Length: 229
Image (cartoon, rainbow, N blue to C red):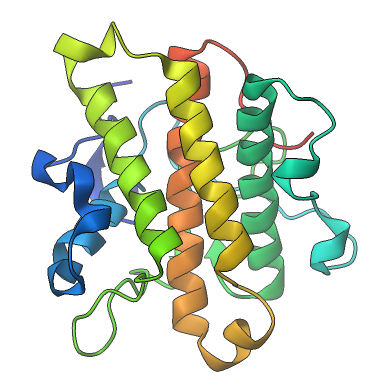
């Protein structure tokens, strides 16, 4: 760790940093606070740990969603830690699918590890805001997921409380928020065709989720964050 790295959010510290802790419960804020929400979401794309920015080469094969991971509720193991690992692997799979289908473009593939964060060539920057400066991510499940991300990052950044945090529960809450987001906020199909910027913003939120899950799995729970299961 240490030093500075360059990624989708520009020059960033190699550790998460949220500049406004008042955004802890920002999922409850009105859409008028969109710019603050976008900044909070963007901050989650920074790298908490690991090597310099890398991305992964998509695997060959078909590009239909049915060929990818089943819903989290159908995971073959009830263990909560597995559910978190599964959510992380699903995020990776979906990002690679988006790269393969041209929704985003990633830099310097690394085929054997999950990234600390995704180095995005296109679109850069991610279209968090519309032309009126309003955050595109206003679905309740989008806002809930970003709220969970901010809460986790605050837990990471606050040394006074981090030692008492029940990290498995925190990670499970985040993975469940991701499940709701993925179930109710489409990226492919009609959204990809008619609202590609919204699809890309949702992918940005998905990438932020993967990055935070990876940090919690490897740094707080001391388990491997799998690229696939």
